[in-house]
Length: 550
Image (cartoon, rainbow, N blue to C red):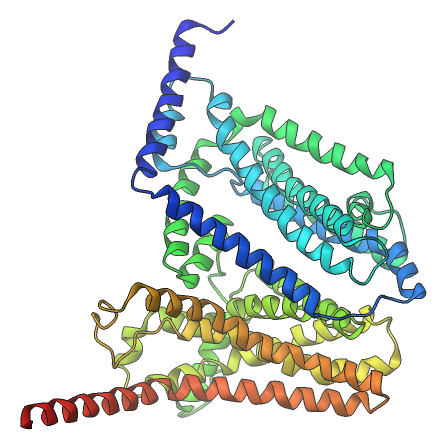
């Protein structure tokens, strides 16, 4: 039986949270909110179903189906292993619960049970992660069901179950690692051991620790009751973390509260660069104070290009090891998805575009730093576009080893056939460079427009502002997609009996043309804007003169 003072304290906490919620939602028009949800669900769900039904991929052969059934659980379990590694590392760094600053200052220091005070935020974190994972898994599952045996509805359910379990593994591992105050080195070692063990299950057929988790995704095809042991283990891990909530670090909660508030504001303002920086701070990912090695300075005058090249490489060589590993994993994922496209799963190239876009945001750090300090670039005696375009050279060269990783992953996905090695190597570098150009567009578009006034968009109608915002968000992904869809050319050549290497060369040329166009856009962007602005000013001045004379 709880003491009267404790009961009064929790009654006050519930009343405080209810009032804060009402205050936050006080100016919200419920009809407008419901209408937005309706539009999002209608158009979002309709778009997914339309894209899924418009892609007429043929069902896989019996041999491919047997391979999926034999190796699918281990491969999908590797995703769960990465989620487990991300969870334990995130928990050791203070995740996954994030409170508002007022809760940390007042509620956590109040004389009430911390576990009961943290129960609702922890449940909300778990609920949002599980819902997002289930939706993503369901969408991917119904796409897989169009090529594999079983009904689409069953595959949607199995994909949702797999995605929800994967998200719960991440949250549960983070809670356990945080509440047990696991050191970062131990969390990294434990997560890496799980990934390597599961990778051995993929490569050599040993029993992996997450095979049962991966097998849940195949329930749209066949159901194995003992796969629920994976769900039971996940629920146990979550239950242990929830039971130890009172052991959450107050210092970690205070640090994350400030960062999460800034992160939400940056997401609201579509400031992707700030979102990336805040995510790195949440993960306590800091760049090295010194590069792994320094490039020797050339004697005499090296010119602006040489100086920017050397400075860019020194910035890239300060990347911490976790970021390099993450970039290699992204490149490997791109290769796997490209191999799946060649094997007949057409929608996989969209996943390649998204991964390439993320990789571009990661590797274009020298360009991002220059954009963040655009006022300094404007003070240099050089056209800003010329300076920005030179910052693309070092990251482009740094992508070459990651392209090799992507090529090897694609080759292994295609069964390590000798005929697939040359096309994979031909397409690897152009496709990776082209996919990364989406990140370049996203970074450069945040530069201030030298030809526009600060109040130029003030009098724009709301519909136009919303349309412009949507274009700004979608356009970089479209650029990345243009270069990743070139993998369809070798597939079409193979099906038609034409030269696969020739088709790969044509696809590589197409990707390189997109890269060249983006490079020229970065270099000439400001000049074109000034010319367009001057042309519009001349038109307005001429119109004003004609009206005054009339």
